[in-house]
Length: 384
Ligand SMILES: Cc1ncc(COP(=O)(O)O)c(C=O)c1O
Image 1 (cartoon, protein in one colour):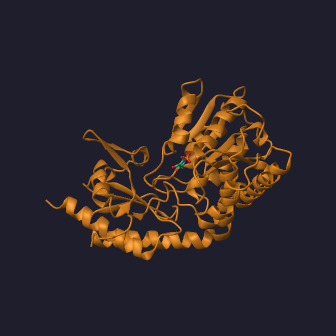
Image 2: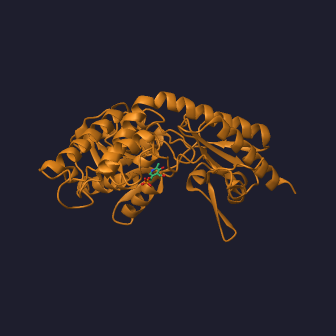
Image 3: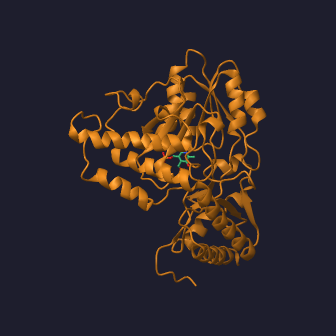
C-alpha cells in the first residue's frame, strides 16, 4: 500500500473542519459585492445588517433560544473568556469561588487559572477513568461563595459527554451561574440550551464547517456580564467592534445545516468511527479505547497503543493520515495530555495515544486506507 497519490486522509475533525460548500456559497455575497458596515444606516448597511440578523436567528434556532441571547465573538476561546471573566467581574460582590474540571480545554482552564491568581478561588474537579465528572463532586464543591460552574459539554480529546443537565439542577437550586464550553458538540449531538439548563454556552464556527475567526456565546436572558472589550456598542456592548459579517454569515449557515442534518451526519460519523475502531482492533494488538464507551461524541476515537510513542506514530503515518496525539515529546521527555492524566490512563498506554475524529466527509475508503496505514506503522514500531 502506502501509495496514495493525493493528500493524507483527514481524521482530525475535532481540531477543525473544512468549510461546507453551502457555507462558502452563503458567505460569497459578503466577500463581494456586499461590503457595507451593518451599523451604517444608508443603503450599503442594509444587506449586511439583515445578514447578521438572519445568522443570529440561525444560531438561535440550533441552540433553541431567542436570537437576542446570541453574542457573536471571534472564537470559542473568546466566548469562554467572555463568559467566565464576564461573570466573575459582574458577580464578584457575591462571591469569589468558581467550580470547573481538570479536563477542560485550555480556553477554560487557563482562564480559571488566571482568575485563581487574581483573587478567585477555583475548584478543579477530578474525573473518573472514562473522563466523566461526578455530579456529587459538583454538589460537594459548591458553597455560598460559588458564583460560577463551568463544565464542558463534551471533551475534545476523548469525546466524553458530561452530565450538564444534572449539574444544571445543582446550579439552579443554588442560584449559581452555569457555563458550558460546547465547542465540540454542535452537529454531533443535540445542543439545546433549555434542555441542558445552562446560562451560558460557547461555540466555535470552525468546528462545524464554518470559517475560523467566528464564534458565539449564548447568554440566558437576565444574566449580566461585564464585557472584556469596550467600544462602540455592537453586540449589545458585550462584544463591540464592527461585526465579522462574512464569518457570521458562515456560522449562521453552518448552524442551519447542523440543525437540519445532525442525526444523519452523526450516524455517518459514528459508522465511520466504529469501522475505524474495529479495523484497528483487528489488525493491531494491545489497543485501548479512551473515553466513555457510550456517553461519547459519535465521531471521536481516542486510542492508546501500548508501548508506542504517539509522536513517532504520527510521523510514520503523516503522509497518509492526519490525526492528533494525546501526548507530546519534547527533548526526549514525553508529556501526557492533562485529560489523559486526569483520567489516570497508565503512562505506557497514555504516551501512545492517537485522537482520530471523523466528519461529514469521511468515506469508507478513507477509513480502509487509514486502518492500514495506522496498523502498518504501529506494528512496525513495535517489532524489534
Ligand atoms: C472544547 C474546546 N473548547 C475550546 C476550544 C478553542 O476553540 P478556538 O480555538 O476556536 O478558540 C476548542 C478547540 O479545540 C475545544 O475543542
